[in-house]
Amino acid sequence: MPRANVDTRAEIRAAALELFSERGVDATSLREIAERIGITKAALYYHYASKDALLGELVDPMFAELRELGDELEGRAVDAGDEAAVRAVVERFWELCLRNRQVMRVLIHNPTVVARGAIVPKMLHWRERVDAVIVGSDAAADRVRAVVALGGVQDAAIVFEGEELDAVRGPAIDAAVRALRPGS
Image 1: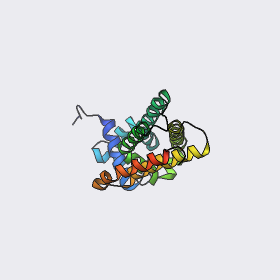
Image 2 (image 1 turned 45 degrees about the vertical axis):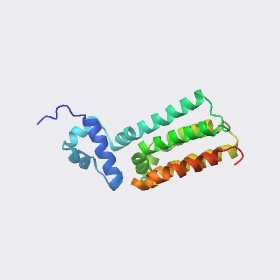
Image 3 (image 1 turned 180 degrees about the vertical axis):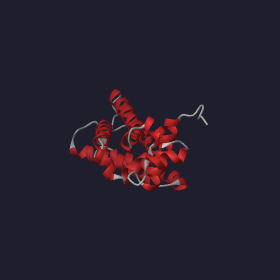
């Protein structure tokens, strides 16, 4: 029976993300992904030539969001002394991490897969760009503050679950803003 009005690529990505999260990338076969959504392995190959291609498409939206945030921040420099502006950026980064937490978890739990592709260099490039823009300096001490602040926010968004996550949001953002304060 034909699959009318179905976005097969989106279904494949959703099933892959779910299975990659549950079992890991290497332990999940393309056949299992196809079976999860009720298509043939050949149909899956029509949309994605390999697991790496599929994984690449899963991480691309996160990179696009990081790039957009970096572009926006470069377009309007954030004054590190303006706590409200810094807080707004940290809150935006928190939301970005929440939207991409499942992808981030897959990347963290599958380091050998991540190393195969160009994922790590891309991820580091965009994070370093956001880090540099948020502190407005290339000085090592300033960059360390940004790495600690945004890395902590990212980790809190990934590690905590459910109601606990709601309770963590405020303290995580507050801690990041304090870490980003000049001279801290």
